Length: 315
Ligand SMILES: [Zn+2]
Image 1 (cartoon, rainbow, N blue to C red):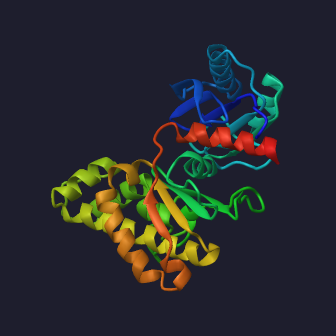
Image 2 (cartoon, rainbow, N blue to C red):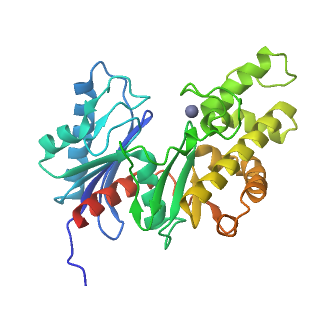
C-alpha cells in the first residue's frame, strides 16, 4: 500500500477567478476558496492577494502541505513557471513559480490550465482509466491538454496541446493569433462574438447584435436565427475536424470536451462536431476515438492543479 502523504496546495489562476484549495490523495478538498480576479495596479499586488488566499485556505484546512500545483491561463513558460496570462495584464513574464516557492517554502509546479483540466478529467472525471486522451476546453478560448501513454505532454516550451490553433477552415475567420481559420477563431466565445460582428457589418439578417456572447448566440440559434445556427454548425464542424486531425497524429483513445460552450450549448455544438468527425476520421484507429463531455465543473481546475503537484512528487 502507498505511504499516506500530506495534502498539496492546489491553485487555479485565470482572468476571471483565483481559486485555491488543500487537496488530499483521495481527491478531497479539505478547504477551498474562490474569488474574482481583482483588478489591481501591480504584479506584486495581485500576487499578495493570491498568497493571502492560500494562507486562508491552509489555516482553514488545518494541515501542512507537501507541494504546490498551479494551473494558470497561458501563455506561460514550463517548467520555469513564468506567466503572461492573457487576461491578467499586470502579469507579464511574472515569475509565479519562483514567488510561490519563496512565499511558502514548498516545491511548486506551474502548468497551463488546459493541461490541469486534462489531468483532472483523467483523475476524477470522464477520462478515468484512459492513458491516451485529449482534454479539450471550448470556452472563451479553445485549448487542450494531451496525456499520451500516461504522460502529460509539454513539448519544446510547454505549449503542446494548443488544439485551438489547428487550422480547420482554410481562409476562414481571423484568429487572435494572426492566422485564419484556427478552431479558436471559429468556435471560441471570442471567435463567435467577432464572427457575429463581422456578419452584421456585412448586412446579415439576424436578431444578434455585434459582439453577442456565446450564450446569446445559442439562445438565438435555438429560436431559429439562421446566422446563429450557422455559426454553431461551423463551430462544431471545425472542432470535429480538429479532433480528427489530432486523433490521426496522436492515436488517441478518448477526447473529453469541457468549458462553458461545450457545457451549455452541446445541443448545438455536439451534432455537427460528431458528424464532421465521422466524415473526417476514416482510419480504423481514428474512427474509434470516443468523444465525450467533460464531467467536472468549477472544481476541475483545482483537481488538476492538485494532480500536477502529486505527479511532481512521484516523478
Ligand atoms: Zn490561432
